[in-house]
Length: 176
Image (cartoon, rainbow, N blue to C red):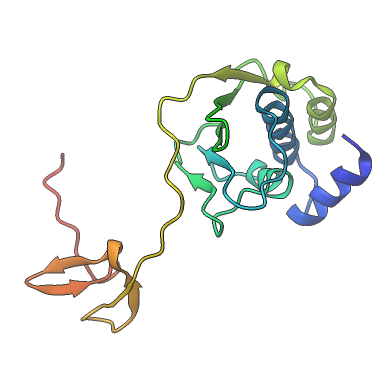
């Protein structure tokens, strides 16, 4: 990776950190194994299992974003990232290897070490356990009958016949 690209990633993210380096490495792995380049639309989809700094590198380098509908958060607290290519059907899940540890290194040294590593030494490549998410859909807005705000129709709940947004709806659960 060039220093210029690193600097641009840092400028997008806001600071240098090992997490950003992990995001860069997973994009390198996705490029190597799936041929993924910057996605102008929804051709590439990334399902991230965390909401850490690494996700900013994925946005910047792979073109995946929540707004385009091709960056999906499936928060499991894992350093795991699944990439899909809609055009070829290829997919792969990249999981940070358990052996990757900061150990005795300080943050800057750990960051440098990550950036110098081969992506295949950073991640285990696995088969995803879930399918490619559908393309983003547009939903009609429905006015919540309690707060008066518009919410997407698929997020509306009924309570005693009234349409409520998720903020106004009291979730019912019996502990299952």
